[in-house]
Each structure stands twice: as C-alpha cells, then as structure tokens.
Length: 316
Image (cartoon, rainbow, N blue to C red; front, side, top):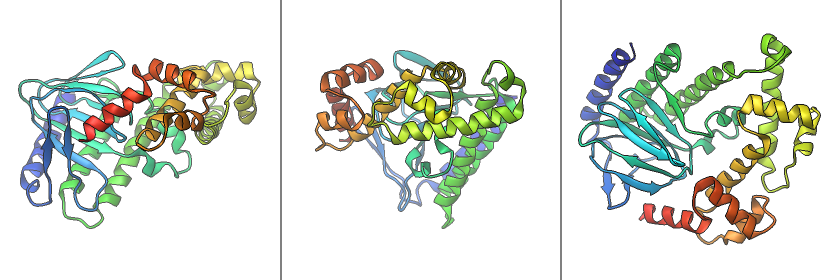
C-alpha cells in the first residue's frame, strides 16, 4: 500500500519538476563539502529533486530538512545513529542538528528545507514543535492514514512550489502547518499516560494545554536557571508529580529536555559570527564557559567553536 502511494506521488512530483524547474530561477551550487540551492525569488523555502551520487560530511544549517527518497535508499547519520531511509519514507531532521548523508550510486530524492521560526508566534506551536525536537520518520508502517495525509500534503506543496501562483508561499505555509498538526495529533495519541489521564479525554486535553504552557515558558526563559521546582509551579504540580508526568508526556526527563532546548538556542546564536561564545553561553543560561562547552559537546558531539566552523565551511 505504501509503495502504491509513493508511486503516485513520485510520478506526479517528477512530472511537475521536469516541466517547471527551468522557468523559475531554480539553480544548484555544488562545492566539495556542501550543496547550496538558491531560493526562488521572494521565497524562504528551498525544495528540489536531488539526484547526485554525492555524500555530505558532518554539517548543519539553521533550517529544518525533510528528505523523501523517491528511488533507492538514502542514509542519514545523526548523533552516531545511522538511519536507513527507503523509498517513500518521510524523514525530518530538526534545525541546527549535526548530520551526515550517504547517497546511493543512483536515484532521486525530494529535499525540502524550511524555517520553524516562521510559526513560533502561533498559539500552542511550542507543543507541536516539541514533537519535532528529535528526528522524525513517517512511513506506511508508522500509521497508514497519517502517511496518506502527509503524502498528499507533500504533493500539494510541490505543486505550489513549482507553480506560478502569487499565493505560493502562503499556501505552502498552510500545508506545512497542517503537516505539523497531523503528526502532533498522531504523536500525542500515542503517549502512554498512567492512571486516570490515560482513559479520560478531558484530562488529556488539560495536560495538552498544560504542556503547551510549560513548553512556551521554557522557550521564553532559556537564559534563566530553569529548575524543576520553578517550572512545576507553572504547571501547578508538585515537583515529584511533574517530574514523572513530564517524562511520560515528553519521552525525556525535564532536565534533558531543557538542556537540549538551551543548546538548540545556542546553535542558532552561533549563526551570528560576531557574537562571542561567552555571550552565547550567558544568553542560554549557563553560568560559565566551561559548563557550556562541556554540555554543548555532550549534546552535539563537538565544541561550539567547531560547530560554528562547520557552518562557516558549509556556507562557503
């Protein structure tokens, strides 16, 4: 079933791509270590069909990335985990995530880069974004109904991108936001909550609203010393109950989540070449540079200085 869905998507996308790619400013720039594709005029999305048998060493970029192999497998390594992507798989790499890519000798894959920050002012988007803080894989085995929905949206995004509609970017925003919501609803339905909340839909809705508030609070206070006690009060829970329910709901401990968010914010600040690393450490709530460097390396596998250098090399 998944293969038949992909075949229809593959054929439609390739037809659109071959018809439209040369008329709308599409171009690719290849260097030894990176690939850079120019945005279409007035757009902040970057979408193309990649067919190069070219590997990409460890690199990162501020945009999130969606990869869909259309034929032959594709391999992505993140934090020492090697993901084998099969034709039809929808794989999303979070923004600012260090990753390396291995390409097969032949084949096509659809690549889309986009910026989460465009959605950050939407109410409850922090809750949605929390489901994309780690790599996400969607295919027919994940949930067939979800996979059908997401494939349809991707096909429509391709039509928008390669089309000539003056509302192109607005339409892509709307479809991409629907894509996020679809997955967030699915992911939230798979959370295993203990006790009363597991069987009570109104209690689940209360928890969703609670965690939306919690995630918003964390994101807006990353430069503070975020303690379990302080955030538990925001959630109106005891710190012991909050610690347990946070792990159940988020899949990670409170302090692991906060640490990852702080380092993600630090990675975004590293885009500013003139901003001293000590300032970045202080702006993300670290008391000193030693702790910041150690934590950054634990999360990303390299120091902030090396991370910034990787982006500088990739941007050239």
